[in-house]
Image (cartoon, rainbow, N blue to C red; front, side, top):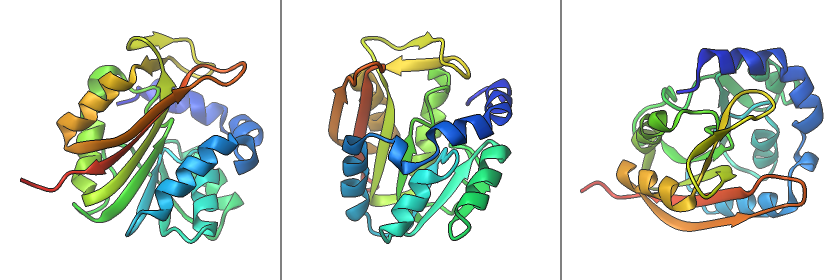
Length: 202
């Protein structure tokens, strides 16, 4: 789980973050294409976990996705609800999604676990596995690196993950990794993305 200090740090900078990065035009075209392809194959409601100022949620809703955004930072929830009043947003965490078991067609977890201590990721993935129905989809965006290690993010300490290590945790939680890739954009840390499917119950 993220430390409360991280939530508070984002709360103090929520408006600044939203003004700088809180629009779909501020995202990479390659990422939008990936998220759109992934979402178009989802059957059932989607949760945008760690939705921030709500731009991904609103964009996917415009594309016809049945989606709700949740974020642990109330300031982000307020901004998202104000900017995108046609979408649903509420406070919540990856470790406590607040939905019934097997009720989701999928979950978008786009850079929302980057501040979670490595020891806390299994709990987040277990909760996602609880909530996503068998055959449902998961898309995770993260900072890719050669080792699991912290670095000085502008808001709070974040972590890089090798794709293989993150994929192993997803497998342990009951997901099947379908696709993974990494890339490095100019002036940015390496990016990673994993597309996974919730395995059928044994």
